[in-house]
Length: 111
Image (cartoon, rainbow, N blue to C red):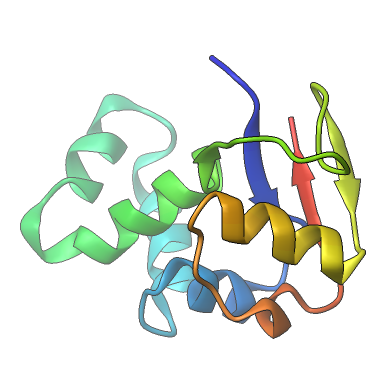
């Protein structure tokens, strides 16, 4: 499965910005979960064409930015950092281009 990189923030608006989906997508995703649960019907519903952003956000919440190339400071099977220089380095090396202010000072985690 591999070690994956995630934002540490739990703020919905920030996660929508980091995932590059419209505001309100998190609420739509919650409504789909409430309607379908974690059943196959849920996955079928988020893969429909008109729910592309819900699918994108769900994938981001599960897999984050994905597997990553570790740096001197950001390495190992799990951890976290709020140090902006360390975050900037790992993001740059892995070509993850996001506005770091959207991390809300919470930093990043990996696991």
